[in-house]
Length: 313
Image (cartoon, rainbow, N blue to C red; front, side):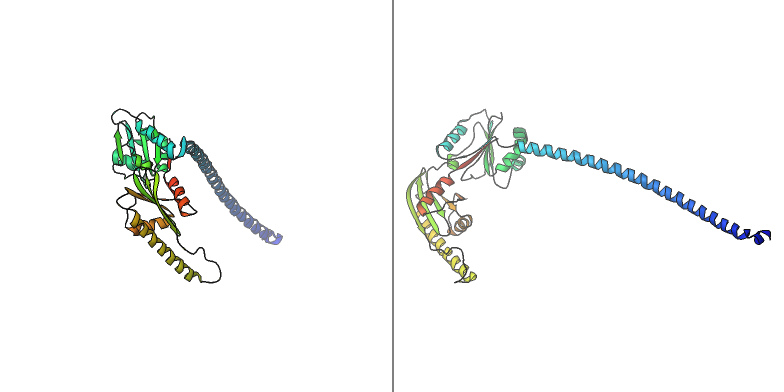
């Protein structure tokens, strides 16, 4: 009664409310503190994990840099394009090299395979023979590879006419290289074919003994005005077909029993089309950049074709 008269009852109620609010806020504070402690712990763990990952990344980047440095350092000791007398001298030296029985390896690699293919098929440990340089052989394919078991000779040659890769690998007391893979030997024909030009030479040990050449009227690039693009292309295609028919006739007339083999060179797509449609089986084909009039273009093409790239590992 006295508390009510003095107004203390309401004050006590207010105090109780405030105390309850204080307890609630205290509980909330303690809960929030726990959450913050857990968050701090989680953050510390995350930071430790990030640090570990950053250290690992730095380690891997260092390994990658070292690997790149090794790959950069591993390069052929020498690369050279050989033709003529210089090529003949190199082939003579390689064929004169002699070892003990099965000490010299000759391997033919096509353009879609590397040393791993030959190693699996013929049980040759190229890694033991070449170490890190084995990757250089893959990059050199297609090629003819010459290695000896003492590591004195390790070269790859990319001849104008790749040999039949059978047998692909051979161990002997010397390297099994045929001169006709690299050098113009015997009696053969070489034809240069472009969309508007044909030149055919018959050669005896590299010396030309017969020649025929001609140019055809084939439209160049289309320009505005005149023919529509589609009509222009049809006319040009017909002209190219006529030109290739003349080429086939010339080959049929000139290539026969008096030549051992035929090589076709020139624009890649034109050469492939002519080879497919002529019924002939060229001993080799190649894309060469020979321009100008038929006869000098043929000489340029012949010189370019009989070139071998040498890589010394």
